[in-house]
Image (tube, rainbow, N blue to C red; front, side, top):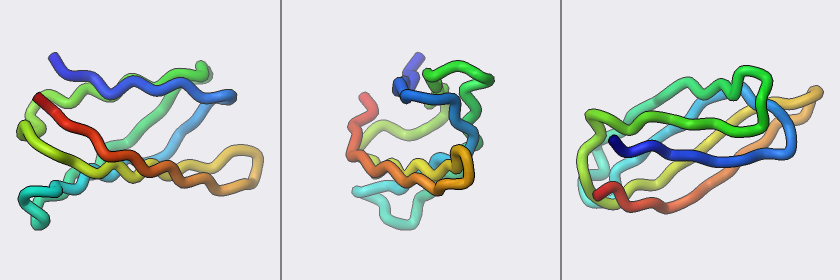
Amino acid sequence: MNIFKMQFCHPIKGTMHLMGVDAKNIQHILPVDSQGKDVIEVPLDGIEKGQWKILLEWEHEGREFVFKKDITIS
């Protein structure tokens, strides 16, 4: 099982966009919620192997945040 795991300095709730690098027309939009903790764990079951760009968007205490990262799912 592949899991995207990331730690933050505060709880988060938002949206994670997975955009295919090899197949640019493939995109997944997943809700993320750390459920009051400072770690998110997003299961990547059913997501095709390959290169992906992650765009994570969330709001905390009235401020909007964006995080971008390239990952490989193997």
